Image (cartoon, rainbow, N blue to C red; front, side, top):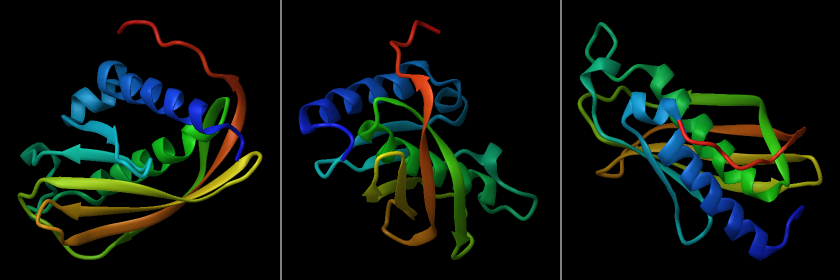
Length: 149
């Protein structure tokens, strides 16, 4: 792993603050994020009718956003620099209407520069509605403290 366990926790705290206090997309979507006891990033999205497509279900692009966030924030603490999503696969399993959604990332591997995560989106009742996998790479952009909005 690129960083030690103490640094992982520090990075997770910084990233939690980054998203919940400074990310415009978090405010726009009404999402919140946290890390669970296993170090997996979890994104919570209450139902918002503005994210429905014309047939009344929650749009697949919302699922993709949740998956990307869950994977990126799960992998990011393992690196000293910022990371970028290299590729992502999205699988939409079934339509979902008027449901509160929870996305979770799970690290598969963190290498020197590349990491892989699996992600899933479930309803709060536990129904799997989307899953995916992502590859993330460390960039040359150094991690820095985030200034206010």
